[in-house]
Image (cartoon, rainbow, N blue to C red; front, side, top):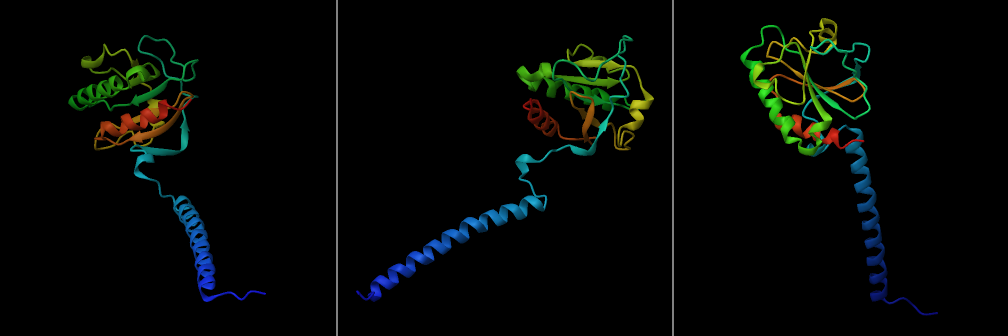
Length: 191
């Protein structure tokens, strides 16, 4: 039988250590990914800028009424996402700015803009009343009352409502428009 030379022994050991290193690298990366996943960490590209409402708020039992008096159905045949604004009675200049900002965001959706409506509880400012996506709703104190943080002292929050009538997210007063646009663009890709 042939004896193993020292060079062959070194080569065999080097191959084994390479295999152990590859094994450690592969399973170490999986362990790190699992640790990050279950600790709740997410890359910034996957984070919402709006505050997720958990559990989602079911407002299907509170169907709003359009300013014209016709009922507004939460569930429709098309996949329409809604941006809901429930301003306080004293909202004036802030509401004008907010409505103009929401009109800009809606226009930036491009070909997907037909799948987004802006619901305004009460009378919207005159500056945006011609916006095709704007739906003025009659004031509904019971709907307004269930929205979390609706009477924020800092201003008027904005909510995202899914096509089935669930409030998913809340945007605090003074939120970044780019964040709302990014979150809505992600939601619009869902089928």
